[in-house]
Amino acid sequence: MNEAVKDTIVNAIRAIAVQRGLSLPPLTDSTEIVEGLGFKSLAVAALIAMLEEELGVDPFSHEDVMITDIRTVGDLCSVYVCFAKPVR
Image (cartoon, rainbow, N blue to C red; front, side):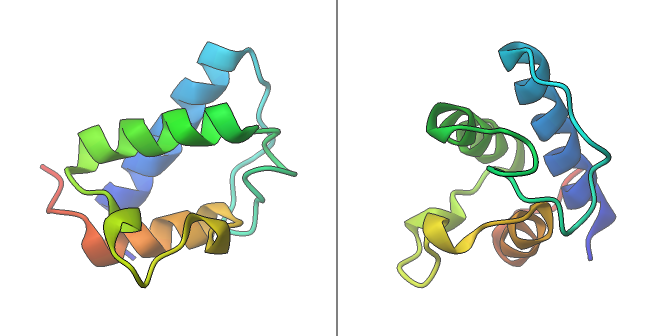
């Protein structure tokens, strides 16, 4: 997995959690975004918007990627690794 993309995603998750006043458990690939992190729909939307800005791509604009298929941090990393532009 592209570690730069994963680091960007983890940092974005932490930033959204701080903005929303959420305390995070240790983040692993199997951590569930809604159940495990407590992210509600607005937090998920803010996360996706932040990742689009940071990584320069919206993988959910591709018809074969559905936001409802993304349940875990690992799922999120996998989809962004496929579509993200190189992180500098």
